Length: 184
Ligand code: GDP
Ligand code: MG
Image: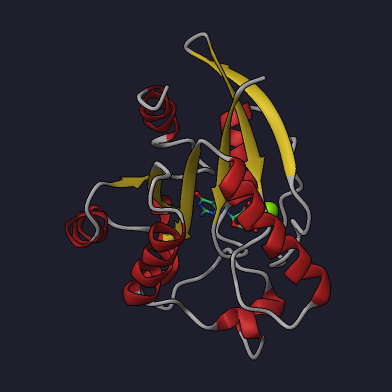
């Protein structure tokens, strides 16, 4: 059995897309509608001869939705069981109003529409660090294909040891795989 790696983060940040990029196949269900991944999906891949078991989870978030809360509880269980945690956030939402790839239902009014601030992202990271102090944690800024080089630079200066990736274009995914080998 491979080394368990949990992929966690808010709904719609690109966890399932990252899983697909890592697995190089359309395994997880990717959707523009937040909350699509309500259960967990797991798959194995060999990187540099080492087996990894990636676990795609529902988002970590306070919620009223019963089905989603079960998913969130499961997220914490999966973190407990994981050897490495990948925390993913949507970097494109931190900059400007341009959210062209988002689903129309999410653009106005819905609870998914509140754009997170960098402080909120840092708070989430601290929450995981406090809850799981011993667990290796990789912080991933996803969707950087939507950012200018200046914005990427700015982001890197504000979160230490940040990995910038685009699960969609594959940018940074190989670097991430190399990073994972360091935890073996
Ligand atoms: P999850 O809820 O965290 O699993 O998010 P999904 O993987 O389902 O992705 C949510 C939406 O973000 C989909 O429309 C994806 O196509 C889009 N997305 C994911 N990764 C990227 C990325 O790197 N760049 C861009 N532009 N869009 C992305
Ligand atoms: Mg998903």
